[in-house]
Image (tube, rainbow, N blue to C red; front, side, top):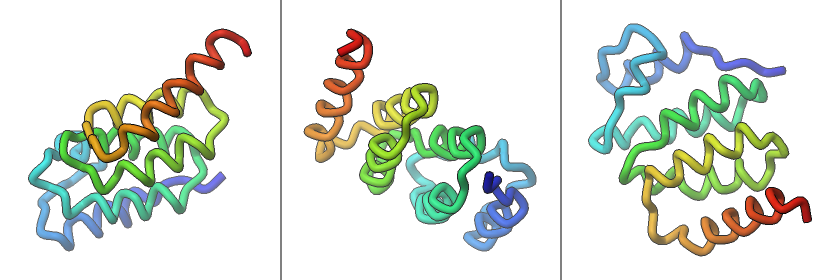
Length: 118
């Protein structure tokens, strides 16, 4: 299981000019911090530890982080873990990317089918 290299992530965020001392501070980013999206997405794609993936997915749940929508949708489609999928869906609902509406509706339909046991 590939875990998140927290020190490397913090270092890369600092290279952008942010003064962060812990990974937890990524939870405080807002829509003015869009330059962190590619770094978080790259780390997300390189790890397999679901707890760490979920943490990064939640950090991306910021209104206006539209460039994270498609990678998150792909994460959703490629995962079989319902808890992780819920976190992805929650982040996508916060991002509010209208261009992803069709994908979001498809995800909702899949969720409803799973709930009904079909």
